[in-house]
Image (cartoon, rainbow, N blue to C red; front, side, top):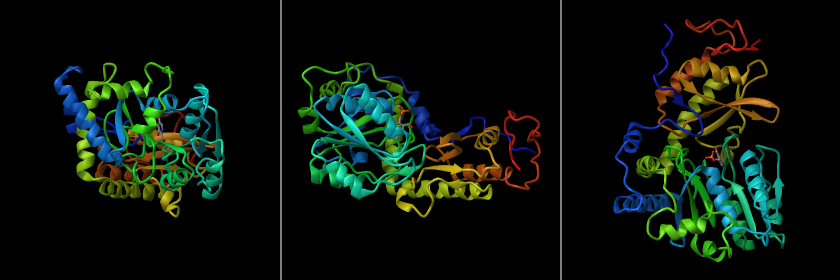
Length: 389
Ligand SMILES: Cc1ncc(COP(=O)(O)O)c(C=O)c1O
């Protein structure tokens, strides 16, 4: 008998993620008015909890924004950098490229230190680039999510401190899933969201900002209304946001944050590592290998793995087969190759990964056909292995 898919597919995607029943219940609570005491308490709780998760010293403050991670990145860069600056962006993945586009949109002078996607930065080269006299700010991504690649935030932070450069980090997928400490890493501005490492719903994002750096970089006139971080900081003084926030999302975020802090990032990371190992083993039986090899321990994300299938197996077929059995995986391009991702940041348990592993075994060379799996009659048949030799 084919195993029936779960009524709700399990999201093994790097955001959005499957939500725990607690988070779903929190989102269904009656909505507080966003200009009243109940909302003020919610806002204060989020700011305090996020500051703990960011490991923010008292010099920093957390601003809760209404929008996705890209909004947080655009708000932190465009509200603090201007034509008088020169930003150095470290690029080894697609999200760093997006940061470059944001700087270009806002007319911020910049240059890149780029290495091929997935490769580690040469820290000597980074040190030289950071020290260039015209550079005022350094911008990088903590985890290149599409690649499952971790970047050396702490090392770059040390270089920025030595050269007295402002340091911006996109930690959209790293917060709650990886070691990150705004204080110890010397970060001035750090962005993230609730719907990845925290396991919460999408729709809210945050920036953890050095108060003095933020204040000193307020332009004479705002460069945007909605993306103006300074406006958020003004309203945060009364525990409010400038516009109507996504209140159900914030209620879900509160529950996700509570669970993340109770578990602790170290334990969470170890749990993610264990779940990821099951996926990597199953992928190996298909001949698929992680893009960031296990030997590059420090560069390997705990919760997101990008797997490159052998030429005989199409990543799209893996994704369709998993979908037919109740698991959503993400197909990504890595250069001219197609790959699939397994991400374990949400309400994902070991039994889910074991079940996914069984389904992936259906696609292994010489696997007997599974009852209920449609025959490979057409290239577009959902759940059907294609181009397998
Ligand atoms: C590292 C990183 N930065 C930025 C983003 C953009 O976030 P959003 O889709 O929430 O705008 C993502 C999304 O996956 C990401 O992983």
